[in-house]
Image 1 (cartoon, rainbow, N blue to C red):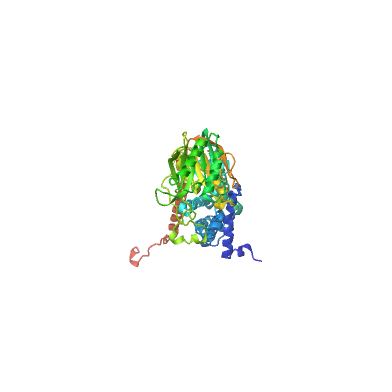
Image 2: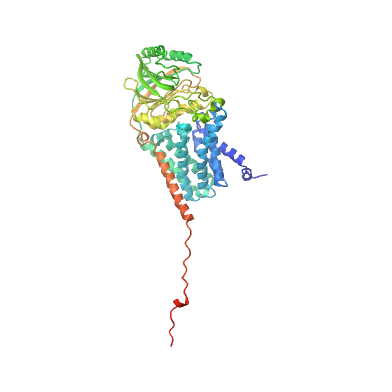
Amino acid sequence: MKSFGQWLTSPWRRSTLAALAGALPVLAFPAPSLWWWAYIALVPWIALIRSAPTGKRALYDGWSGGFGFMLAMHHWLLPNLHVFTFVIASLLGALWAPWGWLVRRFLAGVPSPGRVAGALAVLPAGWLMVELVRSWQGLGGPWGMIGSSQWQVEPALRLASVGGVWLLSFLVVTVNVAVAVLVMVRESRIPAVAGIVATAAATSAAWMWSPRPEVEGQARIAVVQPGVITGPADRFTREEQLTRELVGQDLDLIIWGESSVGYDLNTRPDLTRRIAALSRETGTNILVNVDARRSDRPGIYKSSVLVGPDGLTGARYDKMRLVPFGEYVPFRSVLGWATSVGEAAGEDRRRGTEQVVMDAGQGLRIGPMVCFESAFPDMSRHLTDDGADVLIAQSATSTFQQSWAPEQHASLAALRAAETGRPMVHATLTGVSAVYGPDGERVGQWLGTSASASQGYDVPLSRGVTPYVRFGDWPVHAALLIMVAWCAVEGVRTLRLRRPAPEPHQQPARTIREWPARHEH
């Protein structure tokens, strides 16, 4: 019977096992939400990579594991993008190939304590470089950053206020590396234990000393979630009915979900009048989301539009970061065939040019985002820095109603709230709608995917600035410095190895004439 090592000599078997190992972290995210699993989920993948016979094989193990991770995180795209989902996962999975090489470089064989100590810094930094690159909107954005699996863990949310989701990702990977060493390389367990202790110390320090948001008052904000309804006209009618149920609740703002209005309100004054009438009846402004071709400029936009008792207030935000393939096809001339194998966008939507903080009335300043823009920590940070009291994400996940996507999306708002120290409202058409306070704690109940309802929330307001808002993505900068320092050390070491050894010193030969003269007697 062949040993397991012999079985792994097959490249296809090894790649399949790497893909399965790379998929394991998805269990830490919603819907399973096994947050504790994130701290050991990478161990099998690391164990496989460190056993790679060559650096080239480690590159393939990293790529295969990245493919498995991306496919598992985005498996709910399969019914819509079909085979193209595998193409996307393969392309993005390649980002982990260098990380696989790094794992083998530091942990192969029986690494010394020094190599393990280096691994505890360089491997998390390398992982952050992967998350940084794939966070580019053109590559799909930062959906599924491993730190975001900790959205419901109170100590982790405190850490997010210090260094954002980036700090969480760094520490989660650090613990995984340390656990892998403890399990597989017991000779080097001292630096591994030190890494775990350092992570616990950082968490404790953040818990004790990082500033907490100062809660001052509250705002009464309602969410209108019509549910799965076909056709913009029927959806609008249902939204009207649900909004009228909010009359008499002394609200400060009502929020409709993404694409809640399917017509340009400048060309449909009848719809504008109906929303304005709802504003008068409820005594508050209504933030709707228009998904339509604009009359004042070419193209289709998704826009957050504020409507008051007198009609359009003039406050408008056009979505800046579009969903690849869902709202536009990148490199359409090359990848346009995706529209023939899945439900990719037939026409690219247009982008907005800047973020907007709106005055919603009664001194309440809101920072709207649309759909997966809530996955980008820099957007909520900039809105907070510009003076937003409440962060808002208008979303629609009806296409993925029976998948893990709605809960994954709703969980992101908890992190954005904790990072910025500002409450966040995640309002959707079809669920999950959720509200989080300035510490990232849940306010009230979620509106699930089966709900067609309107719900008011007492949202605590806060002031003050978190370290993350003040200092920005400093964990990313620290990770870059770690990688630069490691590359410099490796470069010096390589030069020393390539420098020819000096020739041994030899006494120069002397000719007969150079010998001391003899004295003749």
